[in-house]
Length: 305
Ligand SMILES: [Zn+2]
Image (tube, rainbow, N blue to C red):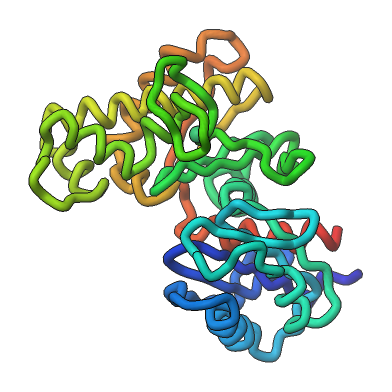
């Protein structure tokens, strides 16, 4: 197939927003738009997405579609049940999108995988072959690119770094296990930990306030970010020694804290990554503000290649 004028439709589904873009073979965004994820039942939510897809597509007839979605999802059957979109439970997203776009390949992937793939394609990882991408926000998502290809795993759920156990005596986690990276490093868990230590315990606050206080030198906030960074570093180094990586890219709301997060993550990674083949591991901020969307489009392109 000629790639000359061909395009792919990328779709990014999240609990707070949904985005779509028409993307060329070299990752150039031709058109894009986003909407707030509406409340409501399955059809109501899909109607809003369908309108977005039609508006963004314009006159384009995409040769394939790639969808990145918050999990959990069933890649084999094309079903999604995003935790924060309560109207969609085992929702047949792939079939519904295909009914809109015609009979083209539609590929579904976890949002963390799409983030990693987007940064690998046109962002911070565009010059490397092996990349771990991590999204630190209300949860901790991740994706891996190994030898230039996304590592999906047999059920499409590889690289669940947020649920890697890093503390054998740790707190219980939403996944049913305990001591997971997410119990230390997600925004809500860091805020909860800080409040238990006496930080702004009477106020309604979020991770953005916590990072501002850490940047201003608040000792509790700094300690909580350091614990979160240590857990992330443990997950990063365990992954790096498993798949032999060069590059880690971190994005997501909590990563917007900047040096307050990146300085301790880099310090802990340096401390824990002692084997020679991971000694030069780099950890850097995401470069794209829509890596998940770009990575979703890349999933679509990969289905054509
Ligand atoms: Zn867990």
